[in-house]
Length: 476
View 1 (cartoon, one colour):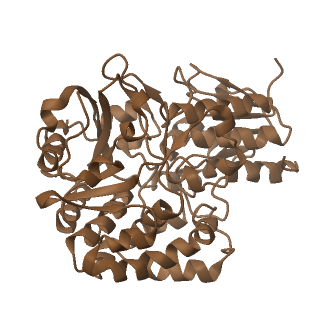
View 2 (cartoon, helix red, strand yellow):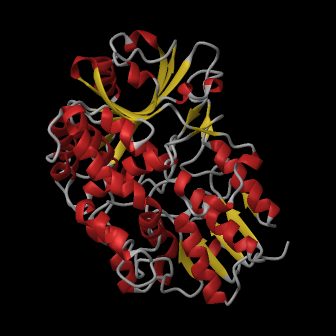
View 3 (cartoon, helix red, strand yellow):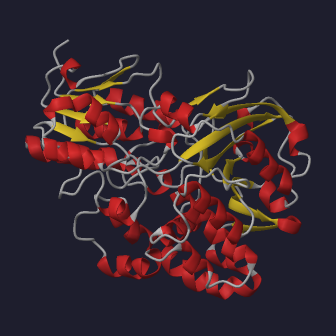
């Protein structure tokens, strides 16, 4: 076959989004993937027992539900069934209590007692402006915001630390709800910008939900591969690339890789100043992930938690803040904050009849080799007595093992880089266009570019649009 117009290295959602965008414009595109199957952080497989299907990395997809790229892909026509749980996410508390995001802002506010009015004032305007905010947040972040007024309203609160937002609430429920959403940042809750995670993830939960795909997250990748092939592109698996010199000549090369990998692949081809800037790129904490095969659903004390697709597990706001502070200081918390997904609440196909799978992780220091299964299970047992009795088996993946599985997860960082204020605005390096490297025809399209981590495909789409402009090709 003749060499393609464009080579994409890496078949995660961003690599595939870039490839699809370029193929739709009429370019010939080839995607090279080192693993046996495409998907990067969006794969599913039987990891514990036969008949138990687990998401290897990503499981719940709030950003997919609001992604402009995915709005161009007819997932339903490709057989992807995204289902919304009755409870978007829940947060158990001592005494059998739980806070939860369910349905409308009004419905959730009504469940928060003394904090109902404060929650309505804080979250309601963000939900009303959410699509306008996302036009910037899911953009390159180095352009004039298309909706400056909406972004300014959001920024007044979003730039604050999550603890400052929680301090505006009086009850444990509302405080914990904000803290759990903010902890997706993997930053100390006292850090600036963590408030934006609390506001935006909660608002997206109200506006679009946090869906789970029937049959696992791998179904999303299958749909993207089909979309690429329909546009004339192809994916080649089992092809690890260790040096840019191994690639065929192409009009453009896009790399769905971390800055560390770019340094390894690029070698002396990269100018010294750019290499040094990449070397200064900071990664966040890692995660220790556990997949469980269960002999029944998790026996949460709270009925609300039993209907939730996602559980934020860590107790009160003070407990969560302590856990995230420890992790960012390089310590393994004794009572870690955990994020759990219960796909069985909407997708009984994930396990044999009457059985369930459970997906979860806790944050750990970067590169950790520590197995955190015991403290994670202690946290679950704390709010779901009898949980351990339902465990048939489990598979644990430490942060170090996660990087070996997917080299993009440097130190086990699943977000592609620390979510500091500086790196939110200037990732991976300072400069106007974050996708274009100093090497002619070489581009970066991974989660280490704006808008960052998550299954949304926007890093790939924005990088591909840069390529089309540079090549003088009209988008498809």
